[in-house]
Length: 134
Image 1 (cartoon, rainbow, N blue to C red):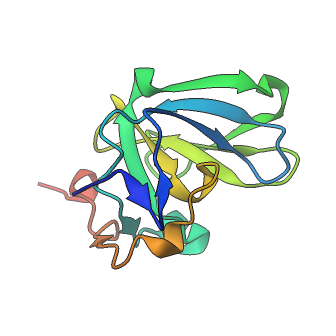
Image 2: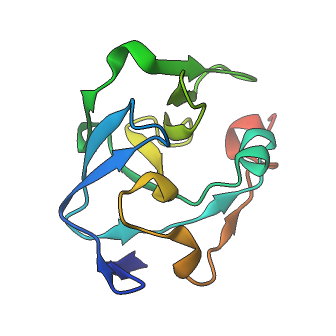
């Protein structure tokens, strides 16, 4: 699923993404709009409650606030979850299932309301393939 408009607001091919306080500002490449938005039910995502979509690692550029960017890792230590050290808002993470991608918080896209996306599917993060033992 690809979304180019949300509630009448256009998703720009190069869109700004920011935390709540504006200390972190990114540019995100979204030439096809918001692709495959989803929720995840893993332990951290349940608590964040964010709608997430993905872009290649090259698809997010930090424009402002490097000194405020914080990282959190847990469990396998593969995924890297990033948030603002000032306001605490989760902005993006490097995915462990696809480490060549960032998952970004759709709610941080400037001018986009993720609640207007409609039904957003839930990914099974509780039973993540990387957690399966052979």
